[in-house]
Length: 312
Picture (cartoon, helix red, strand yellow):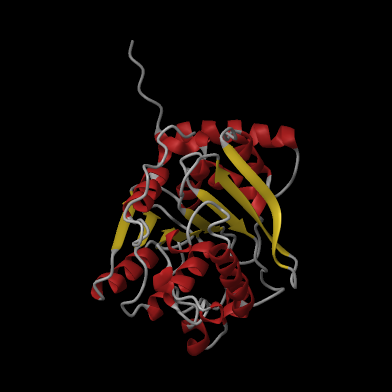
């Protein structure tokens, strides 16, 4: 008697059950799934600093995940998602440990959210976090010209806007083309018009076309952007894959360096959860991110030392 392999959805459900069981034992509420993901991740060979203040005026902090290694390493600033209304940096430890275990320093900042602030508020917070990282790059084991921005979902919109609209980094004498690259995971790049039933989005981005246009990274592509890697699941029901297709098209039209990876059958959260150990086999997110960083080194340095292949 032969047995058919488990359907992909069943294997995914089993792993979810295991992770949620761990999370239940750990306690917690909204962050229970993330607690379960984080509980499975490797921590050896990684130095961590939690709660580093980067914006005293607003009490904003960031976490740092740094490989225990000698020599220069690339740096990634990761902006998490949550519809611009919720989320915590501590939930994404699995992102920090996944990349740090492969020889990359990761900075995960918090930012203020709606309704405490509107778009200008969280974009200013994000720009400040990137500027802080840029100034501290050498202390973090890297260099200012080897700094990448990465974001998932709403965090992808934040990161992409920093990488396209020069006005956000300008107060810190920085420009998007000083970034080594942008990595977007199911980001919101082209989402006009905002539907009338999306009251939170209308509140943070505005109800008129001119206000909403300020939030669209695709509107600011003009030919001076950093290299970009856009990862998107074809089965995403939260952020339409058309967002990634639109941004990739705009960049290609301006002869920009852009790579679009569309993952068949992959959903919105599965794309970022694939960075965690339990879901690593569900999408090649980690492999594609590492390859992009490896092949887009700081121009002044020539090439990265080989990123670790013995990570988690």
